[in-house]
Image (cartoon, rainbow, N blue to C red; front, side, top):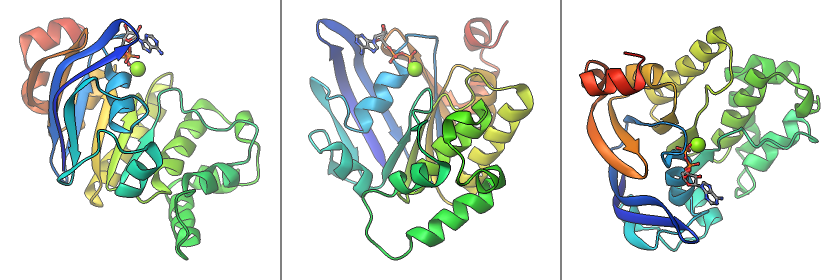
Length: 233
Ligand SMILES: Nc1ncnc2c1ncn2[C@@H]1O[C@H](COP(=O)(O)OP(=O)(O)O)[C@@H](O)[C@H]1O
Ligand SMILES: [Mg+2]
């Protein structure tokens, strides 16, 4: 579904990704794990068209999207729930969800919003509430709900569990599993390597802009190097 080959991404003179190649097959949960500053968010921003690789290729469903505009990438079926949620805190839950559907003009937006509100009952309770007054967990649910409003085939999730209490972390990972069971393909980036590897079919380890290891989630969970560096020994 998604095939990234040898991308090199820079911020000015600083190289953030070096010859990164990953692929994501339809129906998979693929995780990218790595420390703070490894380049995980940069990778997702490059896939969604906010950054351009200097060299290398990115294809989605067989089509090269390296020079496709971000809104066209959303239309093609990729939606990005960014790090730090980036919801519009001066707007209501309803308005944030509507913004998630900004590329659409079809008649089923209302139906999809109902589906998001069924999935996240807390968002229904707070539908008219200013989203900036909600808890971190609720804001994360809104960020995922907003990403779902464009009907993505591939969902990019950047650190969905960051800063959440353990019970909410479990809730978020269960939602990710449900979304996948319903047929969505997921590329998830996490510092919480343990949880991410538990749910991922396959994963990649990113270190200072380089992919250093890839295997099934299960195999990486018991890999001694991964254990030592990312799973607390
Ligand atoms: N807007 C930016 N300008 C310059 N450097 C950046 C910018 N964003 C990230 N970087 C640098 O790129 C590298 C990768 O960052 P990032 O992708 O945010 O890592 P991660 O998400 O894995 O924590 C880091 O060295 C970071 O300092
Ligand atoms: Mg990041």
